[in-house]
Amino acid sequence: MRISTLLRHRDFKLYWSGVVLSEIGTRGTFAANLFHMYTLTGSTVQTGLVGMFQAVALVFLSPLGGAYADRMDRRRLLQATQAVSLTASLALAVLTLVGVIQPWHILVSVLFNTAAETFDRPARQALIPALVPREELVPAFAVINPSREVAILVGPALAGFLIAVGGPEAMYFADVGSFLLLIVALQFIRSTMPRGEAREVSVWANIREGFAFVRHRPLIVQLVGLDLAATVFGAYRVVLPALATDVLAVGPTGYGLLSSAPSAGALIGSAIVFRLAATARSGHIVLWSTAAYGISAIALAQSPVFALALLAGAGLGVFDAMATTIRHAAVQLETPDAIRGRVTATYQIASRGGPAVGDMTIGAVAGLLGPVGALSLGGLVPVAAAAGVTAAGRRVRQYQVPQHRADAEV
Image (cartoon, rainbow, N blue to C red; front, side, top):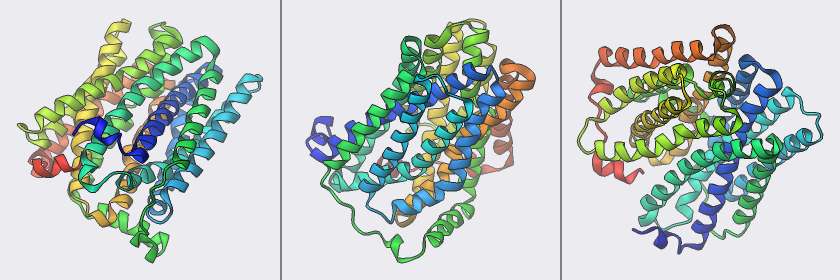
């Protein structure tokens, strides 16, 4: 199916356009938060607090966000979350513009933005089936997913450019505009979601069901473990400002490019795993990609010149995309439709909370060993984790995503 066919659906076109612009703003603002925090404090430890505040919101609110995504009008829920994020970014922009910004302002903004996202992400996924016919769901997700990667690629690069031209407040104001566009786009969507069965029981019962399902699926638990080994100990984002400023001396523009390199690699990795999935065992892809992610993190830390750092950053994206694609497919295939939203929100604690905890962890270690030493040491952990899971048994090593079902879950 061609993209033009999907875009004939008015509501999907509005949603897709708004989400892409909003995602660019969100990713750019997070990159700006890290750089802004480092320029204010000069400390990788304090920069790592950005990740800690993200982690607090993700861990405590993700299950609640998934439950409410199954209970509320998802369009209204998305508008509410966008309004909260808009307000947080606007406050940050104004405080920076008038010259009274403090590090704690950034941390509070991160907390509110991430809290809103924990409700936003499950609702976004759950809204799509209301916007296109059922037989067009696969192409719809195939359009949304690469669009998100493009936004992750463009956002940090845009942040680097705007910081260089007008300071961090320029990125924050651009983020405000992106949130406003999505709020307006959602207002013109006419589709509504049917009343979900999740409303028939309490919110806490919904949350317990999601946790219980994941806990009793050993394959998912081991995949989550590999995910956490890579994202917690190979958390490169928190040291990028220090690497760009103090080690490579490339300034904010170079920082933006370095932040975007993993996203560029992710687009390549997505294309590679699509081809490999037909010939290679899925479990092997996860294990080798996890180990290669750790090696790429070490290469990034040890890169003596900017060009090599960009290549290593792209490698992080390539191998992260390959492993993540298989992990996400496995979670979807192992989860019944009736509780997919809640399980997705539960899994989000690891998939998005891991990088946030990693920022805090690697940031603290970098305060002791420096950014090069911290990321080099952390990169050894995913290599060891992949070797350990390989030696532990066949569950992950022999896992294979059924091709006809995997395609259906793009």
